[in-house]
Each structure stands twice: as structure tokens, then as C-alpha cells.
Image (cartoon, rainbow, N blue to C red; front, side):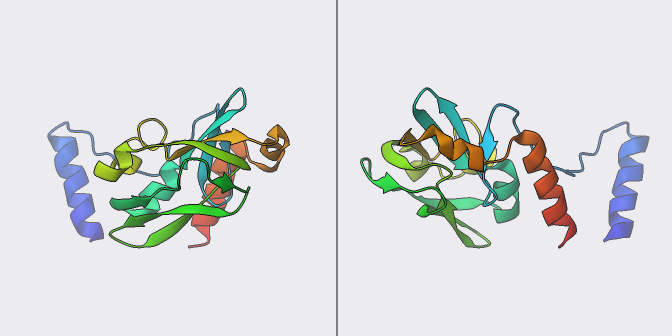
Length: 155
């Protein structure tokens, strides 16, 4: 495998084609992150939640997203749904507590949005937060990047 990769890199270099090696996942600066690999973007009292680029990359191609009902209560750290991929099924935990005010219905027809656009079109739910203090328990982008590097080095 390594010799094939080396050959491909040399061929690409000779042909002046860049070869993309995915060495890290995208982490956005204005979001907060849970150690279970969910992100949250806060606007006022509303929080948009999804899984991180790191999580979707490890899951592989997402084929189904289990969504909660609008109005359901979610608690920080507890599961509110699941993401099923060709590799595995993984619970999705809420990084904040509150009430679900919207679910991303697009994921029912296009679950792969979680892969192609984890921070924009692939969001999962929007929550009316009970307590913005929940955000203190989450990581910023730098902390989350370090967390992922350390976690990946263990595998």
C-alpha cells in the first residue's frame, strides 16, 4: 500500500497534480465542542447542533440520521439521536440542555449532508437553551483540535 501511495505521489508530482492527504479535520473557531464530537453554534438563546468534521470522517459515509421530535427535551451529555454510517451507528449527544425547536428535515432525504457539510447544511437540531452556563463545559476550537490530535495518537 505504501509503495502504491509513493508511486501515486511521484506520478502526481511529475504531472504537476497536487495530491491531497487528509491529515486533520476542519475545526471552526466560532463554535464550541463536546468531547463526544458534537459542535454547537449559539445565537442568542438558540443553539444549532451537529457532529464535527472529525466525527463524520471517522464514521464514513452516513446513510441514516435518527432525529428527535420537535419539543423534546435534551440534556447536556445525553443522547438525542443517532447517526448510522456504512461502518457503524453512533449516538449523538447534546452539548447543551434545552428544548428541541427545529430538526433538519433535509437529513431524512440526504443524510450524506452530514459528511459533505457537517457545519452548515448537515446540522442536526436547533435547541432553545435552558442555561448558557452549559457552554462553560465545552471546548473552544484550539482545545478541541488538541483533543482530537491526542485521541488520534492513541489509535
